[in-house]
Image (cartoon, rainbow, N blue to C red; front, side, top):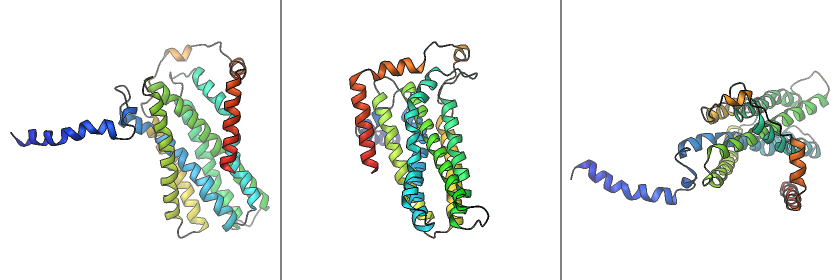
Length: 278
């Protein structure tokens, strides 16, 4: 028995145990292997990073370091939730979108990424005014700029996540689809926890300029993660460029909302989300 056979004999039990005991290994399929699925999940990491930045880092910094009223910061941080009800329309539009390139999901993921990047690009200027380093202009300009930046980031997060999860359901098989979506939300938590720890390390020696550098870095990382996530993921279909659909959003929404079970579900999700955030 040569060395190669011995090595294979030692490794084979682990190869057999891996798919059974490795978390979410069964979320993969022949058409969507685990490596590709993990790369796709990077858009959730970027959303988790933005969530940690808004809810954790900036929440504390604006109140403690910049002296902004807590109620005002609470309103700013809650602005991304305003974009959440529009996720149903975003998902519908991505289902029926006619792209000249033959894509449905990628344009929405890219548009959401640009919104995230734009909000994070505006945010440093707002923080400069809030910190008092900018002497020109009234103080409310910084508050308005910060609110607009947070709203843009929130709208980008909602758009990117909606289209990204839709792309995941498109690529995953019917059997592995629930586990693939579950993996996406696990990666969201990984992004939140990992970026929260990283922000804490980078901002240990806190200063306004250091905070601006961290936000600018987060903007660049967001675009990079989302580009890597969707690269060659959605197959192009030239027939979609000229496809026309007669479906409209409002009739579909009315048929959905007429179901009593749907109303109870939406109320439960809304009240549960409110309670969790409070």
